[in-house]
Image 1 (spheres, one colour):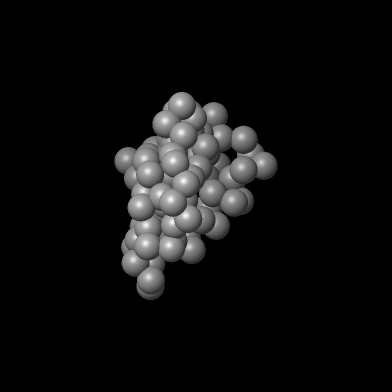
Image 2 (spheres, one colour):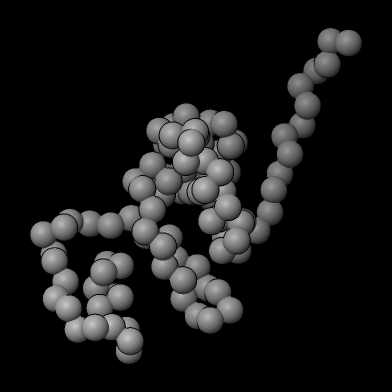
Length: 97
């Protein structure tokens, strides 16, 4: 999808899209200059979907299979693209102290 979109932009060089490349995982957001599309890994897309569904951060990392080395970049992209609209802090469990 991303390569087809890029190939059809006004400033595209007219190259053919290689459909044999297969599918792409793409995050879409609205920026100051219009649509922003970014290719991400399957794990990053699943991580984003889990967060959107309200899954806690640690659980989303574990369930998505996101590599911890990728986490800072994914969070940076989510925040800078305006895809994070709120943060909920879980209530503290009973403190034995």
